[in-house]
Image 1 (cartoon, rainbow, N blue to C red):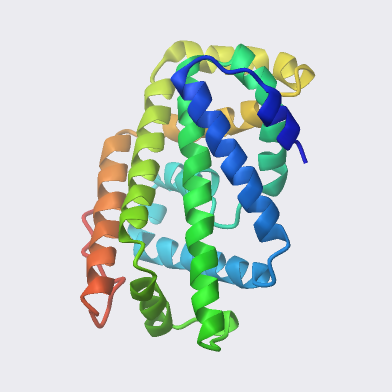
Image 2 (cartoon, rainbow, N blue to C red):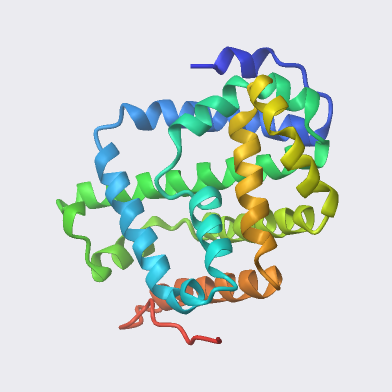
Length: 249
C-alpha cells in the first residue's frame, strides 16, 4: 500500500539503507502472502508454534521476573501471526522514521523487520510442505511438524532467526537501562501521535515496560536461545521427544 513511500525516501546511513531494503522485501512478501491460497494454513502453523514455544518455556512464563519480557519477545519481536496494521503503518511513516529516529534505533527496527520476514517465510514454507503431502494444518502433530522441519533444509535461516531474537532483545534491553528513555517516552506520546508515529511509540513503550521489570535480560535470552538450539538438534536427530528440554529455573 505504501511501497512508493519506501522507494522514494532518501536514506543516508547504513542502518537506514538496511531498514529500507528489508521493509521493501517484507512489503512484497506480505502482499504475496495476503493473496496466497495457503494463508490460513500459515496462520494455523504460526499459532501451533506459538503454543509450542509457550509450552517449552512454561517455567519462564510462570516466573514473574520473566513473564512480561518473554511475552514481548514472542509477540512483538517473534510475532508468529504478524501484525498487519502495525506493519502497514511502519511503511507509511518510514520517511519520518529516518528523519526523526536515532540511527541506532533504525538498526533495531531493521532487526525486527528481518525477524518477521524470516519467521513468516519459514511458516509459509512449512504450509507448502503440509499441502504437498495432503496433511491438514488444522490438527498438526509433532511428528508431521518435525518431518516438515527436516525437509525444509533451511537450517542456516533458522539459526539466523534465533540470532535476531537475541540481538533485538539485547538491543532493547540496553535502551531501557537508559533512565532518560523512560522520561522521554512518557513526555513524547502526544507529539508522537501528532507526527503519526504512535505505533512506533507504543511498540517502544511496551518493550520498555516489559524489559524494565526483568532483573537480567541476558539470562532470559541465554536460556531461551539455548533451549531452542537444543530443540533444533533434537528435531534433526529425530529425538522421540524433540521439545523436551531441561529447565534451569
